[in-house]
Every structure is written in C-alpha cells, then in structure tokens.
Length: 119
Image 1 (cartoon, rainbow, N blue to C red):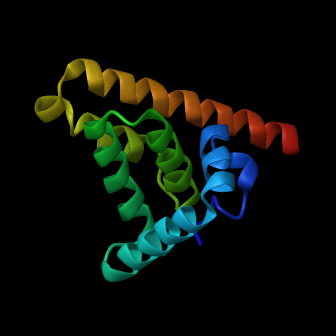
Image 2 (image 1 turned 30 degrees about the horizontal axis):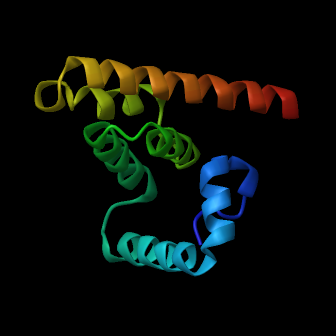
C-alpha cells in the first residue's frame, strides 16, 4: 500500500468514490504499483521525480500533484521538482510545462499551509 492510501483524506474525492465502488480494482492497482516500485533500483525521491515527468507528459494534473507531494516527502527540494518539470519543455512543449510548474507550486503552497495549520 502506498503512503497516500494510508491517508485517505489526501486522495481526490473522485478516486475515493471510485475506490468505494470498485475496491477490488483499486486493490489490484495498488499491488501493481507496489510491484513496479519494488522492481527498480531508484530510490523513492528519484522514482517520484520520474513520475512527475511522466505526469507532465500525460497532462495528468491530479497525479502530478500527488507525486509532487510524495517527492517532497521523499526529500526532493523545490529546485529538484522544478528541474523534473522543465526537462519536459523541449519534448512536451512550453504551455504544458508551464501548466505543470503551476500545478506543482499550487500543491507545494497547499502543503506548506497544511503544515502551518498543524503546527
């Protein structure tokens, strides 16, 4: 099970509703995700930075936000997250890169405010 599954309030409402309707599919998805992560040689931070790039390329805002959160928890700095995003500019294009940069910073700000509220 991944870190966000243990924190259901972090998951998007749509995902939570889908999981409630199709729990077996979500369980299978989680098993595949864990198996894929276990196959590699990358540490958690590198894996999350790669996944940020994949989300950028696929235009997946919610997933990108999730992986920004996970990358931060795995020790990635804002500069490293930004580098993972700007690497896509020549391949994916300027508009999508800027959108992903914006999503990442919105998530980082949301997480910062959450941490302040908990303090």
